[in-house]
Image (cartoon, rainbow, N blue to C red; front, side):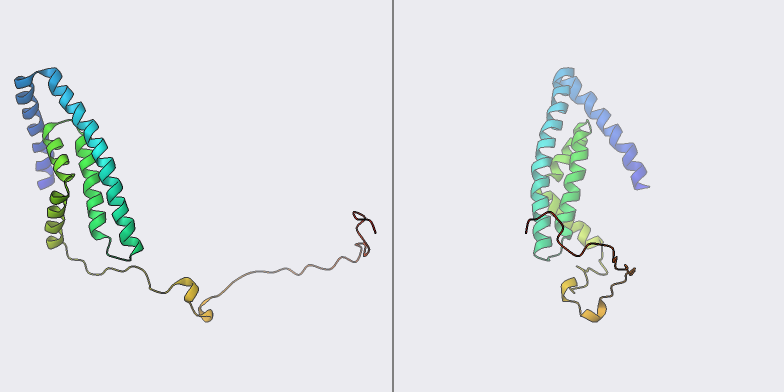
Length: 160
């Protein structure tokens, strides 16, 4: 039900803001602000996304819990979608999601509401460290008969 209300309320808020801001500053400045926020938002999403990707790689290489970098990356992705959507309300929410304190607050709120049952980074056994009895190689073979008609001497490509 809340998703339906969001899809209903956000366009109404955007229309109201376009009317109010467009009436106050005019059509062309309003459109220029919308285009400028899209360009600025794209640049910010790109730089913030690169930092989040670096943090995610760091958590994987140090075998740490990647939940927070993944959540920050997802919020940056949502912020990018909101900033590319024309409107003042969606731009405000998108820019807010690009700031690390807001992302951290959203993450801590979600962390309180979501309970993880299990987190596993793999079996812990490296494939090269398995016991040989665990490795099974299955294959087919065909016996190739020896051909007695091949010459036994030098090939003729070299001189004696």
